[in-house]
Length: 356
Image (cartoon, rainbow, N blue to C red; front, side, top):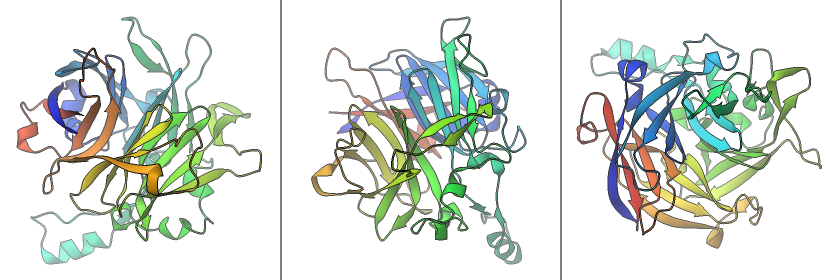
């Protein structure tokens, strides 16, 4: 696959003021509509594409604050570090990174301050949520998330204040529990991909990578009988509350997941603070249950390598465009930390269309 074109994504209002459009971390398509999120706020953006199959531009931005739709465990303005978006039936799903963050050293910091910052680790409650948002047509006929839909569907949250979140479920896991207290960029737990299929959610982990093997979790969200604004993590018939899939991505972690029929496309990149390599793999039969818990060999094949820069142009999200009349590129890729070449204006960034 090669880059077949670019799409200028034009932002306005709060998104461009906060700079969240240069921190894109999640994307999903819905016809001519494009759902996006960045990792510096607790909002989801919706753009309108000029074509559902071969777009060159997306605009008419609407921004939706999670705090207007669900009761977040942290302050409304605190970032949720949204790293994955999924769209299934009448729902839009969003997942936070579920990670700790270590302070960064910046160029202007002296030695003493740099050393102090590396010792500081922060936890933000809004990062530890999975949101299921009810979607219905708005006044303009375009889809928008609402707290309560006209048909009674209600937006709900896993990880609300005082309730169990995903890391609670993993607290005694033999593979992942040791990584819960480690910051994300140190190969600690770091959610960076989400896909929905049927009753299951597939949650991709950028880290930890275990002896070269990436991890994808499968969970079953179910309504909380005590509170319609909350979900809980349910269990399968055998009592299992989550499944771990160990995926051979050549030592890389998961950056995003994207359904394609019975398969999952897996965006793979380094688990730590490195710029490359970045690849897209196809996990054959992933959502059809045709592979085991250890995914290797013919079950996982390389689709394409993606470009990356040195400290810039980090591919963070992939989505499928609608099929067209010809051989148009169907894979849309959005980037975090875009280089100047991806910034045609202060309010826009360029995504890539990848295809044959």
